[in-house]
Image 1: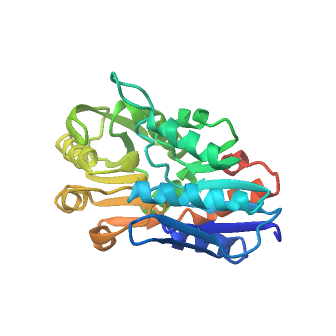
Image 2: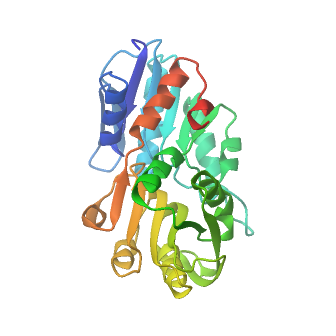
Length: 312
C-alpha cells in the first residue's frame, strides 16, 4: 500500500478518515481553503509522484463549492505527477439532470463528467447513481457500488419476516425488486403524480400491504415530499407501519420538518453525505456507514482485483 494515497476535500472529511483507517494507512495531507473573495485554493502537502491517488469528495451541499474543490485538487495532483487519479464520489451531484427532457435544457450530469475527465481523472468510483446510464457519460472506467449489502443486513437484523418492499415511484421498481428478491418478501409500488419539481401527490398502491411492515426504498431523499406522502398512502391502505431506506440523505428545504411531522417510523440512510443542521438531531434518522465498503473497493482497484465480486 506504499504507493496508495487517500486525499479529501472539505465535503466529508470524516468519511475519508474512516476509509483510510480501514485501509490501515494515514489520510494524506492537503490544504483546501478559500480566499476572502470565495476563490478556492488547494495545496498538496506531500509527495505524490508515481502514486495511485484516490480523492474522496461527495459533491453534496454546497454542490458547486465541493465540485470545484474536487476539480482543483485533481488538477494539483496531476501537475504533481500522480500516476493515476481516481475520483471517489459517494454522492454524484447533478445526477438528476441526466437527460434532455425539455427543450433548451442541459444534461448537467454529462457536463460534470466532462469536467472531471478534462482535469485528469482516470477512474471514477461512485455509489448508487440516480441513473445507471450516467456511467456511460465517462470515457474512462467507472466502478458503480451499491449500498445494498449494508442496508440489507440492517433490514434483516431489525425487522421480522412480515415486511413488504415498496417503490415510491415507477422509476425505482428495479431497485426495490432487487431488495425484495434478496429478502424473499413482497413488492408494492406507489403510483404518484408529480405536478412540480420537488412536489408530488401519491395516488394509490399497487400491491397488498395490509397488516405488513412497509419499507419504502429510494436512492435519495431531497425534500422528503415523496416519502412522506408515500407513507401516508401506505397507512391508508392498511400497512401496519412504514419505514424508509435510502442511500443519499440530501435533506434540503423542509425535509426535516416534513419527516418529523410524517407517519414514517424511521429513515435509514448511509453516510455518503454528512448530516448537517437539524438533520443531525432528528430522532427518526438512522445512519449506516459505507466507509468499509468503499475502502474494500479502493483496495481492489489499487490491486487490480474484481470490484463486482463485492456484490455476488
